[in-house]
Image (cartoon, rainbow, N blue to C red):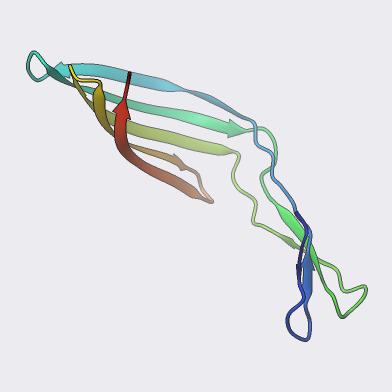
Length: 126
């Protein structure tokens, strides 16, 4: 979506842009279930791998000032590395009830950026 920011002396216009991603990942995943008692268990998992980005590694956005015709310019992001290490751990508490509690941590690490995610929640199955 193109956006206009008409406020001020030099209001601006920013064109939309997108990055495309296609990654291959190779790695190892381990998964283990630990029984606590007859009604509960902890399901634990971990993974480690290597991801390779096959498409865009940088983005660029073009913009201009509304009050200055011909003032267009482009801003380019720093390039991201194509290679990343991917790691993650997950744990879930399973019960005989249809409710499960879970938490996980995932990360993608490379020389120019780090992406991390922590998730937790309840899962109800019916």
